[in-house]
Image 1 (cartoon, rainbow, N blue to C red):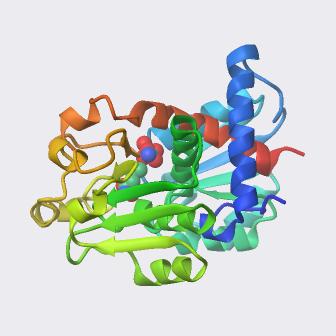
Image 2: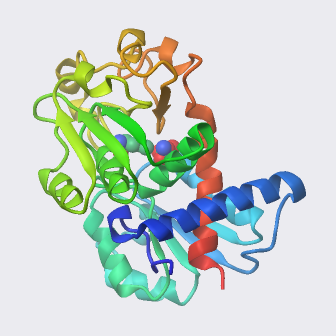
Length: 304
Ligand code: CP
Ligand code: NVA
């Protein structure tokens, strides 16, 4: 059974993740054949953004439209979460208006509190801690590109951030040999690694990017300064030197290794233009799969 909310992939079972991926594949092919559907006719999704977005906003909004529903964008200027009104009251009010809420914010605790007090599904559209919706699209992309997810070795090179944590949570459910290669001082949260490892995730953490990528099937990276860390950018650029995904690093991975990135990307920082635009890069199909994965997720959570 699909859980009510998507706060973190760690809360889900493998079966629920697989169900979303199956729906995503089915809805993607139905849309290619028949165009828009009415799976979510009359349903509304509120989208709260405390940080900027291209992919998350557009894919949720267009996803709702293509399935016959509607989405509305709400910025914090309007609702003033915790300043104009408490999270708990917002959760209860929105529960009477819309059929689901997607929220992108800083503190994961905000998403947890919304989920605790709402009677409708709450979807984590990125926090400082997690980005589960991106992982659904990434898993869908790996499945399309490699035919399966189990048995994939993935090197995540860079910051031990929300993306790294989401990969660690994905490794709870799939047979993924996950290596996280990060500079000193930028490790993923040890508690997240420990909890996932105790549930069977195969996660190796290293400060050597060359060791991390050796023979892997997927090389993944993300920006070195995430949203909210802009003031640390100069310092991070120095600390992350040597962690750039360039052709020399890609050459250590398997011959047919894919390059993936959640985007937005900063060419010349975490990845070279050569790799991002190169033959192993699947970053644009990956970005487009945000739409298809979102539709699978919305169908699982919102349809009757
Ligand atoms: N990958 C991703 O979440 O992109 P946006 O920040 O543009 O939504
Ligand atoms: N780690 C990045 C991901 C963007 C999709 C951020 O949080 O800004």
